[in-house]
Image (cartoon, rainbow, N blue to C red):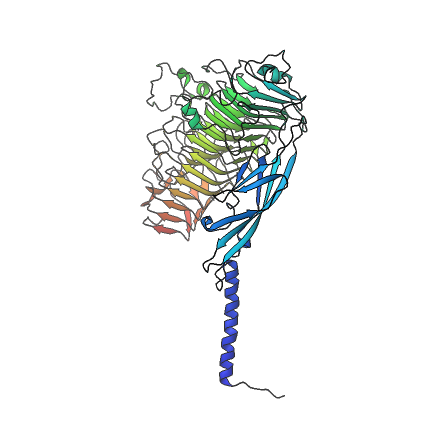
Amino acid sequence: MNFKTLAPLKVFLLSIFIVSQISCSKDSDLLTDYVVSETQNTLDLSALILDDTFIVNSRESITLDVLANDGFENTQNVVITQTSEPLNGSVAINTDNTLTYTPETVAETTSNTTEEIEDTFTYTTEVVNEDETVSTGTGNVTVTSENKTPISGDNVYYVTTTGKANNDGKSEATAWSIQHAFASAKAGDVVYIKAGDYVVDNNLTPNSGTNNNPIKIIGYNTEVGDIISLDEPTITYDDYLDNGNDLDSSDMPLIRRSSIQIENDSNRKGMNLGGISYVEIENLQFKWQERAVEGFQHGPGIKVKNIIVAWVGNFNPIDTWTSGNLTYDPPLPSVASGGESTNQVGRGIDLSGSIGAEIENCLVINAGHTGIVVGTITSLPQTLNATIKGCRVYSDSQINPCDYYIEAYNSQNTLVEDCEVYRIKGLVHQGHGIDFKRGSNNTARNCYVQNTWLEVNIASHGNTFENITIKGMQDYSPNRRSGGVKIYHGSHGNTFKDIEFIDADGVLFADVWDVVATPNGSAGHDNTFMNCVFRNTQVNLYRNSDSPITFEANRGLEAGGFNDSPVYNNKFINCTFENAAAMFTVNRPNYDNEFIDCNFINIPLVYSTRSWGDKLNAIFTNCNFENSQVP
């Protein structure tokens, strides 16, 4: 067999060509990943634009920020040039690159059936490239709007402050009284309540609706449909302050008792939903009850939206919490008794033992015990699939300060989303900001917690907290805590992702006494913290801590005495700890807690001087120590 040989120069040139082709192939793959062409210096917008989906009320226009979820590095360089025409509404381009979508007018109907109308359109964007060429791209938008609730018809009734039981309720002029409306409305009825001051010294209890025909009770200001909450309450805490720390009955209907509560009375309710199914309430205010909206063991189909609550509970200074011997301004009566049994009463919205309860865009201010709760003592059925979204809970009263701000007790698959809780600094009670207690597979995400705690307690497991900011208020005199995360009483297998601790207390592990449980032998195990940031951890004299991680000693009433339950197998992955007196306060047994790819910055001590001698048994893998003591 004969072979042809190549000249050495040809071999050399051929080898360069082959290598260059392989190299270019790899480079082009990389360039594809970054969607930027090096030769043309232009953008492939199809890889950056994501489709959008919105849900709107059919009566109102809504502003759509369609660029918010797109991958543009700088939206200031992007221009929306045109849109297609939707079939069931209209769309306009705003100067700030948002779109205004207006659903078409839907004829009023006497039917109480909610009809969803889906509309679609496209938008086109332009970006000027570095070589002055223009790249264009198109995105798809889907808008789902609900057909409006009827405002007239055989099943529609009105309530005003001057309404009477012997009226027909078909208009404001012939409106019902509020007591008669609650007693008379049946499945499929819609009751509109006009803004005003409704003094009701008995419990309002509606009838049940059905799955296809719920009872709807909706407040309005001057015209039906003029109050719409999209993703938060329509009344704010600042509105409350501007009104002299009170609710304004001219904004929305206010259902109240004739006087503030100065004794314990668990039957003093605003709306009683116990045993009731398929009732939807919206745009109502409550105050001066012990329990504003309560639904112990109610059936399915309960929805509450834009409910505003203030001053629920016992606000008699004689009965208030006096723990810690703090100075009160004004001073408490000399006979003040204090203590949990007297002081901690008052619930804003309580839908315990429920299936699929929906609590949306609600505001609770100064609830003596619990702001919003789904699930309570274990003698009730387990709470399943509850949703708490867009809600706000505040406590600013030194008399009967809030205990639990948002609580899911004995619950599964509860979602707490886009919620905020605020404990005003200096309150004697530390509070529990968002608390999963004896629960599993619950989720809290996209929330803000100020001056109080995230908590898992009583063997809670499989819960997830993600994208939450915890902000302390730097008020650290004895008994005044700044907040953080508590992992108590054997809670395990919980995940904390993207949690930011700012001027807070960090993470506390303990095995504490509770009114329904005694220490169980574990102070928390197999929990995972991922991508969390701890900045400026503060001194907490009550907790005897000055470090982002505390294995708490638990002396005193809350702990039921000292115990040596261990903390073990917890993981901190890709977390940053910055600016603290020490890394750890070690006051109980611990082992196999691991720190992986973590950064410790400006922390001079491994052991806090507040540690009592327990040994730290932790594992550090690929961690960085910058201006910090190395373990």
